[in-house]
Image 1 (cartoon, rainbow, N blue to C red):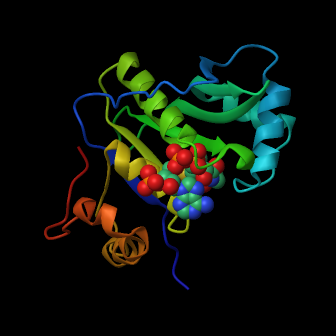
Image 2: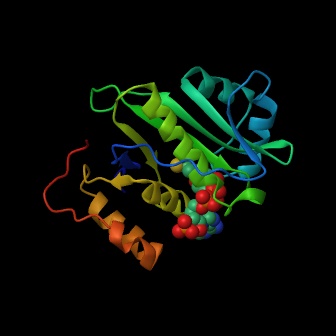
Length: 186
Ligand SMILES: CC(C)(COP(=O)(O)OP(=O)(O)OC[C@H]1O[C@@H](n2cnc3c(N)ncnc32)[C@H](O)[C@@H]1OP(=O)(O)O)[C@@H](O)C(=O)NCCC(=O)NCCS
């Protein structure tokens, strides 16, 4: 089987997305001592591989701004904004997006990703991207709604995006890309 790269989506809007106010939740950056709650969130999430203290420290070392949503006395969502070049240009990458399973489906995913994009915009004008996988339908819904755009920089992408859009439902069909000529990233 040939190697398939992750999907890449570039943020396609000039303005940052609105960050919705979520009653009962607080959005804030990382502060010392968050490791325990962050690790508990990633372990409860269970969809981003195995996590331990060392892996968390490695992520933190490469993260420019780490954001959390706190609610019910615990960290319930996370996303990072990373200084990560792509195609030989300085870029911001949004990474390690997770919401605690007990808090999913309430808009916290869209809220923390919107906040990470707003943070990236505030850090300086650079292209913003993220990498994800074909099977992550809730994540893809978040990203597409917020203004991230599928891109056609690998021959496998048109077929893969067609399969994804077939799973997304009527609401999303207006966001379906038309991959004619090879599209360049912004
Ligand atoms: C992706 C993730 C962060 C979204 O968190 P969330 O708080 O549930 O997101 P939201 O409530 O903002 O919902 C986002 C969209 O996903 C949909 N969604 C939420 N849970 C879903 C589910 N189980 N199945 C299908 N769609 C779902 C929502 O309906 C919404 O779409 P809509 O606006 O069309 O209604 C969360 O599902 C998660 O932690 N997934 C595992 C880790 C992961 O895949 N991270 C991304 C790595 S790139």
